[in-house]
Image (tube, rainbow, N blue to C red):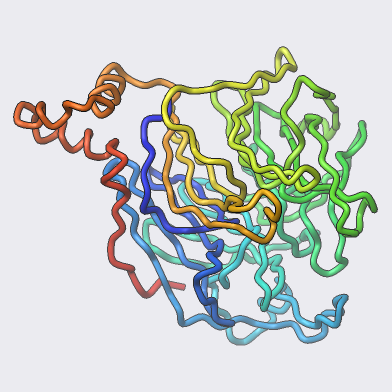
Length: 407
């Protein structure tokens, strides 16, 4: 059941978010109506899911180390890298603002990796954020670090972060490799595949962990394979990586699965993988459908929860907390003829409840009633607060920005 449908969230596209102790932290992304300076540090929007309030953490006093000897294509000669950062006498651990990055949670800390912006380009520096103290630091790593990229995925499994795919800045190519960061040893390594074919090179796909397996779906591939020719390809097969055995397998979805797409979002619930939204440039279509993949039956099923469904979009975030999915941000097209040019960034918040209580269902029905105001004199203060959270017209509340992130 879709229980909340409100306006007032921050407008963000290609941001990354994760939940820690009842708070959803959203990092970076962009809005075309905002100005981003060269030295802007990444901003954080924190959503308290109990009272539906956002707090904005901001620190504009950033400075970034540039590696001048990096030899990039297209006359680009700068890259933000682990080596340049750690060799610098001036170290500023707050990451620069970016999009196409990933964040994961491990032991109540948040780890940000990858992403890019048009000035600083891509990064391979691993940042750790401590939400309890509002503090950043750079993790000193060793081993084979994945090349800087954006549009990849990162998931946590067995005290490790698993990174797959994306678009590599230095070599200007799509990736199909898997890299693993060990949180206990702070060592990067490339996973050597023992069996099966790797998925096609891609970016802006999704990955979820179910048991010891990583399920990869969707994303943008290219007719040139590794290289970006501008001719996008979209596949809807499910690629499964057994992280214990390093074996890839593939389930061919065909017409039974959702249409191929990129910049969608995915989450898991009760050992089922769900995907929402996304965009297919071959057909110029944005989506707002939800599909569920059962790994036991190896079948897809489209689901249609009751309530107000989010509008079509891509580049949004979906975060699972308990039995609820929190969906916010993204962008949608205002023109069917030119969906790439006429884009509108979104500032709404939606909640999909997989296990709504009788109280939630009753409140939803009460809100839908035209006589709701007649009941206000008889409703307790606590119940009224719950009702107000679910009333669409009230919206999401944002608090004053907090300045001065530690790091």
